[in-house]
Image (tube, rainbow over all chains, first blue to last red; front, side):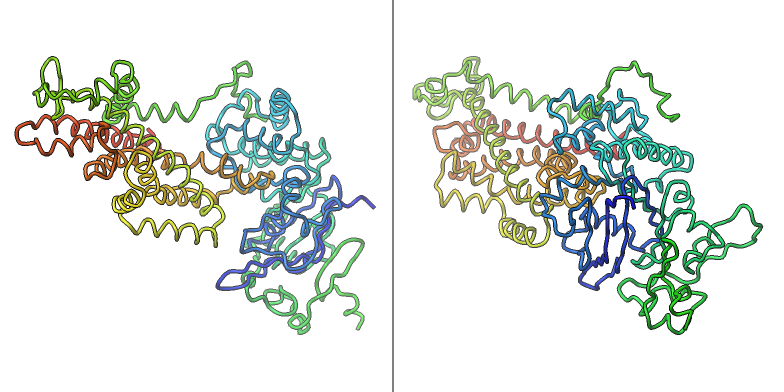
Length: 328
Length: 296
């Protein structure tokens, strides 16, 4: 068994507003081992970003709240750490790449200053020269010429900005990198370059990564293990091979997701999207969250929440594959 | 890795600053440049007046034999009812007015920025308490508020400064608060938090530099209104006391002689107009230069 870096147990997150209580994450279990890449896939609103923000403990003030569960990062329980501890953890043990590189850089600071700031915050180096030297080194690592460190974000293209964002995230060599749709805002060729670079850097620095995306293609290229998220739960979790293997057992939602993307090897006239919409997170259906859209719905699905069933480390949360039920 | 190929690696680190871009846009505005030239010459006059004027003998000493002379080569702006040279007094008044303007705005800016930043950044109760206090001040017209404060503390330079500053704190607090709220929600602030940056540092390094535009514009415009306000207070006898040559109090003294010696009123009046005009022109020019949508 590899050593666990991040262990999320029974995580519940709520957003409380004046109008309603939004149940964003409902009992999520997930582990990330050292050096491993885990993908988190799901529709918009499935709670992927909320999960990542919980690990950083950056849920919006006054609104977002972790109501139950624990997040153990490298032996420290994030849900119980003080704000001062969190500041040391953020950037040093875990850092995050945000979705949109256009807006995640400060427009009035040069990129060199922004990279140097992380190093400064975590007191990595004593002298200015050492910091500058390290900034050059990191820029070279992400494929940017160090000569451009005196320039401002608006002087860079989108792909280059994302490289800067990645440089900032990796500056302190964190153990865990949370990448929240890092390539969604980039066009496809740049996307491939950035992914390639992230993979290489991960290899070099032995960083674990939690990759949040709704792009199954990105997952297939990058991830060791994949979790499929629906309405704040992980409905299926397995190695990338297990998830992408067509003739394996799958959760009906996973089947639906794969049915929604075009397959180059088969001739189909139409894609088969999943009917309906994600349930309203303020008013989740009882039983299995997916039963309102599931093509294999059974009476039990409407009343009883399915227990996870395991098949060689491959987790599925569905009544159809629950052996205990099948044997009855 | 194709993107880096476009840059010649032997280039030295280049830092093309935002300031340069702003200066480039500002320079194209002729009126704003006129305002800046005017203001700089006023600053020069204020700074050098101490070198060629002696306060005790040339600015406030009374020479009754030379009283009420019209402008001449000896007394460029004439003399007042106590025989004091009006030119010397107007020049000295520049020191007073600029000092009052700069000092008042500095206090109001510092305190207002602090309140506005706390209210805007933390929101919720902090915001409500601070901004309701500011609202109480805003509910009273600035001049009335200043009159009330000076009335309570008594006239004099320091009290006038305080009164003018207190009356302007809420305005700065509001501007800074709204600027902070619009920037606080942006992703780079979240990214800064994700790096472990402290709140104070986020406000100082990441939010305020991005809000500097509207704040700088307010600073120049408020300096103009402060100079005008102090002149107004002095005119009604609540400001800086005689014999200090404040432009407002000079106007006040001159109004009794207006019929036969109008020059006594004209010169301090023109000085007030020029200083306020120059600051307003600078403020307008900066507003245009700092607005990125005006970029061309």
